[in-house]
Length: 81
Image 1 (cartoon, one colour):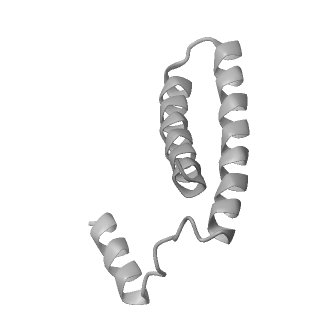
Image 2 (cartoon, rainbow, N blue to C red; image 1 turned 90 degrees about the horizontal axis):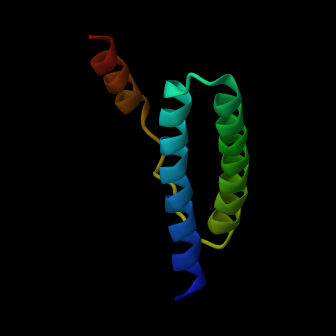
């Protein structure tokens, strides 16, 4: 397994975990549990961003291109209707 594959796999795994954490946080009635999961989420978000920067620097991850002003306006119009 090459490094690029491993880095992208980890990024995808963290992305899935962050989604799960958000669901748990929004449904947690216990304040301590909620705060603990928020701390874990925050830590994972920081790790994900650091790994993303490494992946981007090595060319392993290519973000989507910039949206045009026309595309932005279209999405705003679609959402506001």
